[in-house]
Length: 175
Image (cartoon, rainbow, N blue to C red; front, side, top):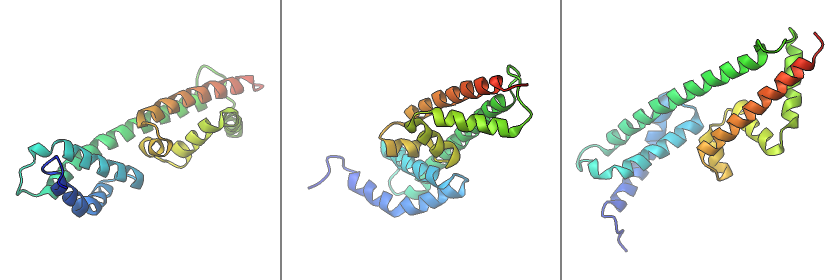
């Protein structure tokens, strides 16, 4: 039985031929392994969506690597922003001007530990996966059956809750 899309079988063959090399290429551009797999997969999705623009007879591997290079740049910028936001957020938590912060790092760590314990199990697991195991939101989303955006939103709410909890606990500390 032939595919209703005339280039479907050809495209599948190209994906089979290029997938391992594309993952290695993407990984070589500096992404973590789990992010590299996601970006490689996304490159093939974009390639399929833009297949009508591909000139038959030219190098499919080079074309899909160009797509992947663009996606890697986008992911690296996103990761950089995420790390800056996280660093700023952690700095606010640990050295916020609005609350008298004890000089004792142990008090800060203890406040974080207690606040994490107060989170619902699902929230604790999400924080653990993202910030302690460094798993990308897209990977978490695929395991949870959710979108990456839903995971990012949940993480934002969890960071806010942790910030509020830590701020409150540190304010309760005797000066």
